[in-house]
Amino acid sequence: MKKNKLPMFLLALGAAILVWLYDVTVVNPNDTSTISGIPVSFANEDVIRSQDLMVTGGSSDTVSLRISGRRSELKKLSKNNIEVTVDLSQITEEGNHDLPYTVQFPANVSSGELSIDNRSPATVSVTVEHYIRRTIEVRTVFEGDVSPGAEGESLVIDTDTMKVTPGEVTVTGPAEQVEAIDCAMITIDRSGISETTVAEYDYELLDASGDPVNRDELVADVEKFTINIPVLKFKEVPLTVRTVDGGGATAANVSYSLSADSIKISGDPSLVDRIHQIELGTLDFASVIGPTTRTYSVSLPEGVNNASGVTEVELTAEVSGLNVINLTIDDFTLINVPENLTAESLGESVQLTLRGTPAALSNLKPEDVAVTVDLSSFTQPGTFIVPVTVKLPDGLQVGPIGSNTLTVTLS
Image (cartoon, rainbow, N blue to C red; front, side, top):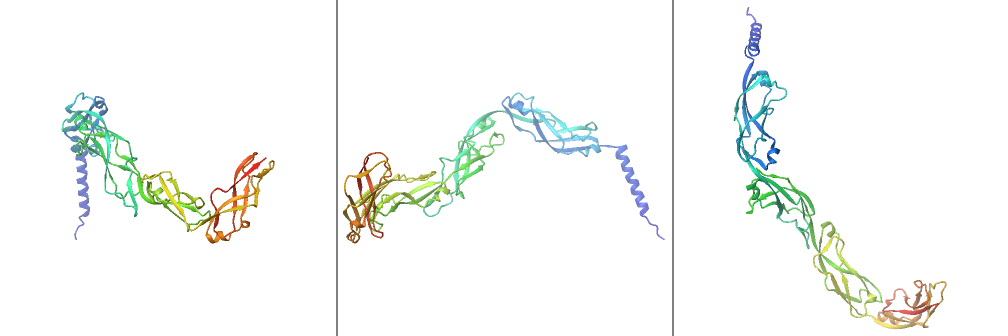
């Protein structure tokens, strides 16, 4: 019968483990480890900066250490928890300097159980130069096209009011490099911009030839610029006048024209989109007696600009197809006479000038016309020329024109 060998195997394995543990903990508990790629940091940079010096280069950004000590402590070490520091405070002039460095192990490691057998490199070489500080002008350049507007409209970036914040950038670095800087250039892509926009932009430092300046050794106090980009919409809008029938005239009897039928306006798209026409004012047909000329000022809402430069528009108007008659009205009424005064007209009749179609005027009789004289605006004794109010039969294309007044004395 075959014997089971498993117990013997397990016993042998356990014995081997015990021998190994004895060797590494009693006979030989120490070991050696090489750790590479440990990053180098600099201390007291502010000290050399106070002397207008700065580190512009070095032989190595990392070091390697060969460390001996207890295995249990070595296992806790890595390139990420060992601190290697170069003290810059001992530097007093520009040039190349070979500096020692200190090594700091993490707090959970017993430093007394470890020793550094080798450092590679033994010192850290740094290059130090004098630096200067300059304020650099900011410029902008555009590329691409603004989104097209609808027919008769166009969108334009208003560079005159565009605001870049901050308005300048201060650059610190080696004198030769800083002095080579001509400007800080911001490139703005216009494509897709259809309304006023506020955005952040990167920038390049360029020399006088327009080539980028290497920024590896330069320090700028601005990371990005904030730019308010105003977008103006340009739009052609018609000019109109509001007409009021009067003096027996309607739109069928009055023809008029404007010296400018439209103007171009500009402004924020949200404002311009609300404007479909510009009303210059009112044209009362009663005031059009024979060939007539009126001048209107072009007035625009706040925030909207007159891009055409047309500030006044002349209107010419003419009446046709109407006749004019003079009519004497003996029956008129004085109304709203002040309580403490008496009113007396200087004249027993009112002379009216009426205009209308030939047919309407031929059928008009004096008794069809009601004339009232409203004295509510007068409170003191005196003699006044008062406009009269004329009421005519409904549907009759006749109306008063000119100055129809009556002289009244209040006492």
